[in-house]
Length: 193
Image 1 (cartoon, rainbow, N blue to C red):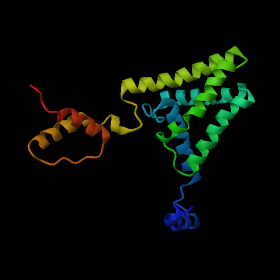
Image 2 (image 1 turned 120 degrees about the vertical axis):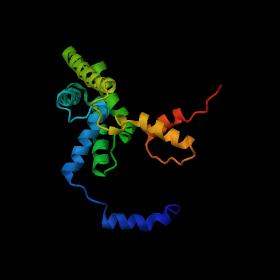
Image 3 (image 1 turned 135 degrees about the vertical axis):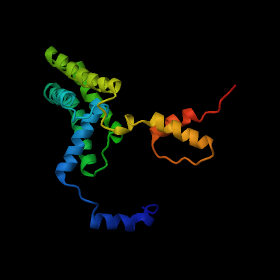
Image 4 (image 1 turned 45 degrees about the vertical axis):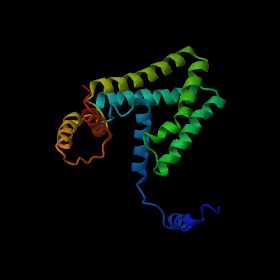
């Protein structure tokens, strides 16, 4: 409490005034997208209809199978994940990167259902749904045409080559994109004879 005293005034102000409010529908849509991204990754955007709908159905089937066919103690893993996802979404701190911290609850729920489901068809359906979602994500990685994040499809190779030439001529290069810096590092390596 003593260590937090310098920032208490700001905390009290934020609690009293409140943060910027986002419409509930937008927050829920963001949470659904983050859940989609956790299963498929950003390699296939949900707005590409054919793979997006197939992945969405596979994700919904996997979650439903865990809820229906898992025993109560192991079902709690999924409920813990859902509670954390809901809290992160409502507080507006959920993102595909941050969901990796709570992903073990989802992995445990899926894994225990695969290992302990009493009906063999449930195991096969769950395995098939998870494989389908993963396969769609892998397809997106290899096709490089369905990304949700445009940083993967922008011409960073060509831009970094031009920037490296400019830096070689003594000019200053400024940037803020990790993909750009990846390629720039390759082009700015010292040439060893």
